Image (cartoon, rainbow over all chains, first blue to last red; front, side, top):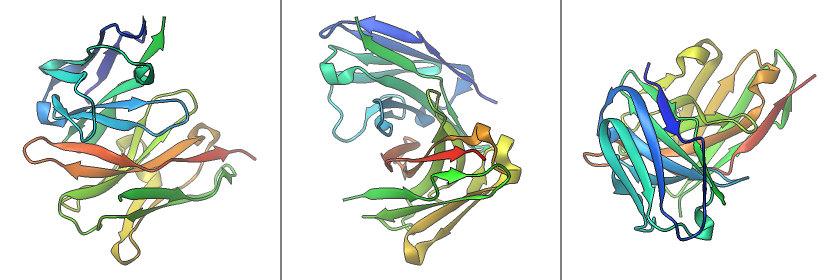
Length: 109
Length: 123
């Protein structure tokens, strides 16, 4: 069973700063099935990135996904006020199983 | 406009069976590039996959909960139903349904989510 480890658990940053979030898989995974979501308090998650690096419809280009194999990164180039939220990475494998990481909270410093 | 809406009881007693319905609109459950998934989130915790119907119509559920879960779809009603037996207080969570979208060459993403429905298990 694949485990996704997200780090850091909490990221304290100011608006305008760059955020770098990590998602590490316990074994090499198919990039096609690595996805990132954003969740704000009291809301459902929102799809940000699919296939490790493809922005979903309507997602601003300050969000960038990258990585392959076991190491994946979500970068927010310049944080805006609406970006403070919890971010989850997720992987689907064909066993089939959907796995989520525990999330990274991006909070205002 | 694509929407998904969960419905079901807010409160269930331990050992009871939970039945949740996801009613979709704006797309067809027959669409070969679309599926539906159920996910839950206990208060303050991470997301957990429960069950799905993939775009290719394959159905499956979480290994750890498999014996308790059933997923089915009624295309004519545009509904996907999840049942979970033998409910326990540890099953208290917000339950979401979401659309699985198959992207050409780039796997799946959960691109539209319902608002979620809170379920409390308590006597």
